Length: 380
Image (tube, rainbow, N blue to C red):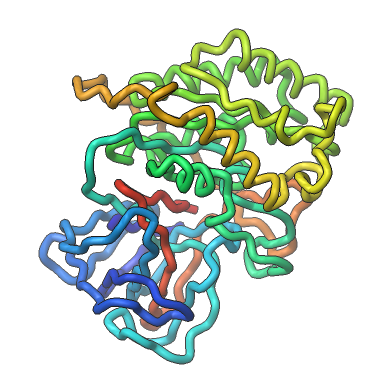
């Protein structure tokens, strides 16, 4: 297990992992996690700390509760995509059936789970709120519906492929943010063979198509030594909160043309024909859009099926190359954005800078999916 601090320091006192039950109840005995032989650790702001190997067996796609007692600042996602996760006052990481918890649906603290398994293709998805699984209206402390990582297109594709698809998307980011985050969001992941890149929607209002194409080229160039690259075609966009809508539409068409015909990539995942209305590529088909920008749960399902069809082995995915590859050069970290307010923005919430702890011991139970190799959760 790897954990990451938020904008301030973090002290983790203890952690356990177990098979997940429901409503905070463990379905197996909790297994203690150690860090260099110790039960906990202290970390500076944004520092990532990885545990010792853990003797724990689980099937592909099984869900876990990772429980930890912690003080300080936790890296956190912005959207509430983790239903059935809880926080507790006091120390309950080793308790199988704690009581008095408060629902806490954002992924916090836990950065990755690395799993030992058979060698096979393994994917990581880079993107914005569309890929992270945001639907509409569920941001920060404001909850009008429950987004759910299990309904994100990446998880749908994973279930169909029976191969791990880790999710490194960050709500609100554009291409420059994705480049800046490679060193912390993507390159630390082990066993990756293929990168699924769906990014650029949030740049259409402020950058020209030539600028977006150039930055995508930079992103692809930095990913190429690390993975095969599959670019997702940008989704229909029915409105914009940034720039002139007609210009945004024109730029989306141009960027998609670049991805289809010019970009140096291994393949494309063309979501547009499956999601767009008949005869109108700038609008979602009935039931596939949520707010004119984000796909609905049904739209996410369609995207996952499209991705799985493209990526299904052995048609398009060769066995992993076991020869050494050049070590990617991490991009210098950029300052994190100011945390978003609790009210949801119209497009996608910027990633929150971190979730501050209370000063007294707090326990968190996070319901997490177990992938064949690892599970990627948000650092912000």
